Image (cartoon, rainbow, N blue to C red; front, side, top):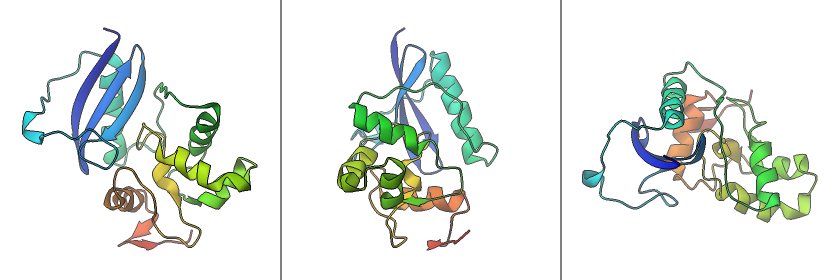
Length: 170
């Protein structure tokens, strides 16, 4: 089977995970601003047949249980060369750390493209694994998360970067 879609319950909602051949092509929260809109009663949680989706679910479970800080799964996203650069740079933000959109634009050596960088970040289709949740506003505010801001807050708290919604400076 070349493509497959599976659903997985996570501590912060149901994830829709898609694979293409031996890569993960998307991990999105259903019924979020970017995810598929679907009646949760209609979702089938059948075990996936795709080995890559099984591995992805295993790594996500390890992440949620605190056992994993870095993902080692093959991913692929369709996007422009610019978007690919942004998504690649997101992978350099370590677990438990955050950077601002301005810092991300500096890392990409293109501070004038900060809005385009924000848009590319928002078009990331591989939530959690490509950690767009680790990018925050310059003033420390939680801004711009396609999986909804409450999930961004949860993920950053899980990684020890926030405590009760307050930015930790370490």
